[in-house]
Length: 106
Image (cartoon, rainbow, N blue to C red; front, side, top):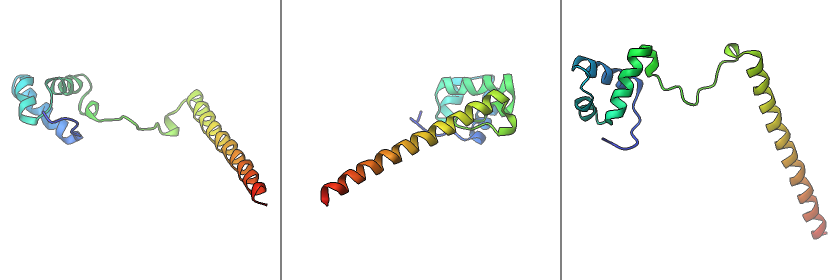
C-alpha cells in the first residue's frame, strides 16, 4: 500500500469492478491496486449502495446557489459579510498604525 496516494474516480471504478469480479476479495484487490483493505471494501460498499456516482470525491465542493435553500443562502451571505467586515477592520487598523509610524518620523 502506498501512503497518501490520490486515487482518481476512474481508478475507484476499476478497483470496484475488479473486486466484484473476484467475489469481493478485498485483500487481493487491495494488493493489486496498492490500496488498503478498508479502501477496497469502502469503495465496493459505496458502489453497491449508491452506484458509480457514490465513488466521486466531493470533498471541498461548494453547492451551486441554485441548489441551496433560503437558510443556506443567508448563512453564506452572512459569512461573506463577516469576512468583508473583518477585512475592513484590519485595513483601518493598518492605516492607523501607518499614520502613527509616519508621525514618529516627522
